[in-house]
Length: 423
Image 1 (cartoon, rainbow, N blue to C red):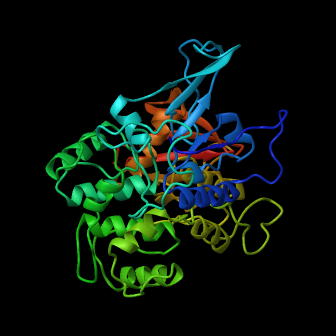
Image 2: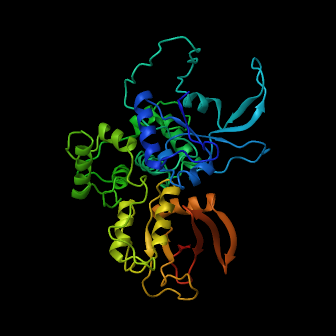
Image 3: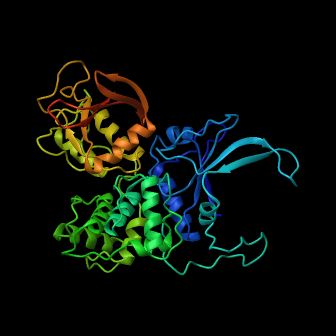
């Protein structure tokens, strides 16, 4: 089995200095040393309080969560992701052991468990104490393991690549049954074990070399990855000068030949790297005014640093509340890196009723179509559903200590969107 990184409180307190960036660095070192994605043992309480809801570092690791004495109640999701291993009791008994023991259950099939343990078909695990003491270095590039329940930009990338291979799948950043079935179909068509899990062999078959002049879903996959590193490029499927320049800059910063061509080595570095959406929220370039409002420039600077593009159309962020911008950045992180498209801010034209209005800087409108489907799925599957507002469905939640109300607005004139209030 892969090594496990244990993230939990010490005598009820968060470990000193722990944060998402530190965890990401440690997991990266472990991944390089062992050639596999480590499992992360943690709880929602640790993620919410010690990591302050910033769980981007955990996006590629299977989750092992404790929840004792809960009957059939499963552990709460961490960063919108569900458990792979559930430690459901500390008072179990195991033949051959004296006293009480922790007992766990794995969510998945035996085939999936064997894949997690990196066992080939027919291969048996090596008994403890046998074999070499130091595992040999992997002969091929290390790739993250994606399976049902995974979220984030790597899932979006895989979905674009599956689409490029002719599979019918939506690039929403959520690895659900449709993505699993599309993966299994792709694997069957390429002579791979059809387990619906994207590991090294599947990654190697999925990735396509793209360069200037290329177009289609494979280009979108590369653009989605490059955008995650802070490059302000459109995910439009057209490999033009902006995409080439972003690819060359990435290659230079990662010790690769800066030819602007996204081939096997560049794909591997892109998928395995730490995206700009994972570090802690940076401070604005100049202090926010005393009333908590930001200028347009301050708001755009914070959004860009978090990997969120400038709003579309005539949207204005002048006078938006600092907590509103912090809230939408926390939403991106909590959702595992969903693409955020802001379509409404403080510009005129919104209802001015109530204290927490668009005009007062408390609300943002987010797109629901295209990449916005990732946000929609995250809200509907992880947040608490409340009473509707009129005829519009409504959900509630907390993002990094900021209360969020999500209303799925369906105006009579069209333009369905999420109306989100951050308080």
